[in-house]
Structures are given as C-alpha cells and as structure tokens.
Image (cartoon, rainbow, N blue to C red):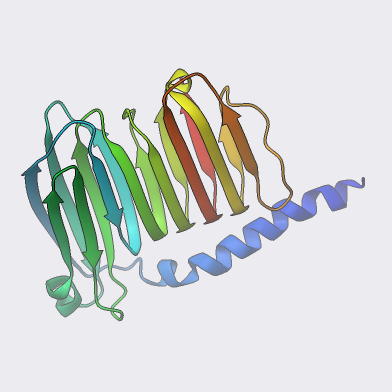
Amino acid sequence: MSARFQLFPKFYRVMVLCLCLVPLAAASDWKYEETRHDAKEFISGGYVHVHSTVGDVHIKRGDSNMIRLEYRIKSRNESSVKEAKADFDVKGKDATIEFHAPSSGNTAFEIELEVPQNSNLDIHMKVGDITIDKIEGDKDLELGVGDIRVAATQSAYKLVRANTGVGDVHSNGYGETSGWLGKTLKYRGDGKYELRAHVGVGDIHLNSN
C-alpha cells in the first residue's frame, strides 16, 4: 500500500471534522456569559441522564450523594443567554438534566457536574467534548462531533464497546481497534459494568490505570 494511500484516511477525517466544526468556530466570539448553579440530593448507584446540544461537559466524582451542577451559558446574543436554561429533575433512581437554548444565537454550555462516586451515566450531546473522571457504574455516551475522554479502571468492566464514524479510538489495555475512517473497539473483561461510547466525528480516549 502506497504512503499516499495510507495518508488519505487521516486527511479525509481532518477535512470532515473541519467542516463539522465551522458553525462552532463561528460562534467562538462570545459576547455574553452567565454562570448558574444548582444541587439536588440523589442516591448512590442511580442513573444520571444528561442531554445537551453545543458545549462541553465534565463529570466529576463527588464525595456525597449530592448532584452538584455548575454551568456557564455563552452566546453572541444577550437574549439567548437569558432564554437558555437547564431542566434538572430527580425521580427515585433517575436524575435528568436537559439543557435548552434558542435555536438561533450561537449559544453553548460549559457544564461541570459532580455526581456520587457510584453513578450510571447516560450522556447525549451534539457538538462539544465529554470528559468523565473515574466514576463507578455503567456508561452510555453518545456525541455527534467532538471528543470523548473517560478515565476508567479496566478491571471494572465486563463490556466495552467504543466506535467512531470518522475518527480514532485510543485505549490503554483494552486491545486492538479495527476500521478505516472510523474505528471500533470491543473488549470483554471480568468486571460488572458496561461502557458504550459513540462519536460521529471525533476521537474516543479510554484511559485505564
């Protein structure tokens, strides 16, 4: 296989990623920002559902059974900042946090979420990055464009499935990946949790220690 042909997949991935990120780059000149906070009592071993459109989310391990939320709204329009909101609801073992912003106005969220150390995570975003610290529990992560980074103890998982439509899967100790423009990783272990991650365009990083 020629060197030129080998380089084509990487070149193609870069081009697709650049096209997908054009709208986000155009909105990077934020003129208005506002930071908000919320917190609710929860339980260990529950399910945390997060749905957002554009922005970044960082999920951290807490030292209590509280969910603590801090999020920054950024936009080019002041009215969009005022209209943007987060619906935060807890019912039994399920906590749901949904972020809403006007369809116009180039609005993004920067989300910091602290959850109990044993929490099952269900995260769905369109554009941005998802970063998850070492949290015990199942994980179902879906992202349209951006990167997913998960700090995870390999021995905790019985199943890991990670794939990208266009992009790479970087893992430490989870085995080899397969694929061309997109990559797929399948791993089975002796743990009790499952990790499923999908990115349309971007990379997945699984950091095991």
